[in-house]
Length: 469
Image (cartoon, rainbow, N blue to C red; front, side, top):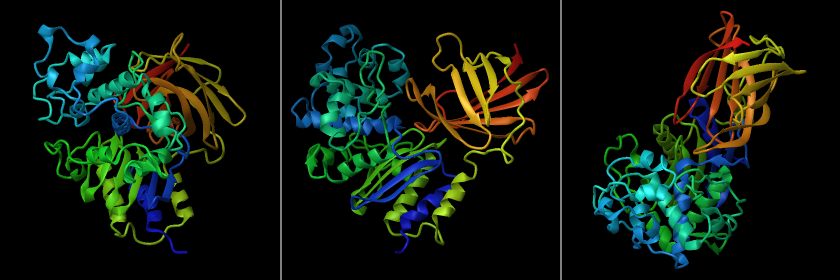
């Protein structure tokens, strides 16, 4: 049997250094490619960031089909208890409709995200924001707008968004009940915070491709899918020329693309691409430091969909495995490392942005356990195992989108390229794009600890001395 062109794509990704962690392609409703870069794997939920918005859009469509709301309903009608005082109310607020939230045309000129999420009551904070443009006339990407859609669905259905979607979307698609982060009042975040395995994102895309059905079952009306994936607002202003698939128009929480395709996407390159003309769905989870790299991935997927060659030559499974291993995580060549730590000694860490207070190492038969202490009651405090010869899977508390969660982490240890006496401890949080590296090397009467994270909304690195207690 000849090799499929799709099989060339993982090797191209690996050789180029493009930070794709998982990729599923469906052609004609069948799996054409399912690939996970080590240590990522099938069945592990992945944080979707703003790709969550597209799922919230479908929730609105289902609520519409059930007669619970319409796109022309005024937003203020759902929140009579959260309205700002009349004297403080924006003159355009009564004109804002559900469709304006869906199409990112609520009328705000600036980024209202910080002002909204800094408050306990996000809906009240949203309604209190200044609205400078007539709703429907000005595209401004807005995560708080999607939050309001979630809040509306929860109000009209009487259920939180996940419970509303279990019998109507997730269950019919064969998706286990997911984790979806919430605001301080417990309303589902809507615009972010949903976690789904990559293969489940592909199922969601296949439902969209089939016009709102999945395996013969109607999930959402075809008319809503058509509206959601047609141009509802103009997102072309200010987009760099090289990001062509981010300047093709915007639907209802979907970006339109070339070739009649459309997508949901999220920070660092989370992707659900649907191309009806190619009968193709692509789901990917990535760790792109810049969303410009998403365009590269889209280009390659469209090249494949259009029948163009992906790379010269043929690829074997061994080729991919060899390329995967390079640079993912290292181990000791002789099964052991000299460590800069003294065992069973408490090292007190100087002030740092993470609030890490101390470190302590305890040797084990083939490696060591490292205890991180962030202070009394801090859920991040705990012990992680490291092995000199192989990667280990454990659990640790680390942030996802809005909150800290206990989640899977893969640990490994390798030499430091900067200092022969130093060591790099790598933590792959495989439910997110985050890869944390602690480089620890000897310093005068202390250790120098350097923290680095590959992608982040906050600080990406810091250095601090750790001194014997």
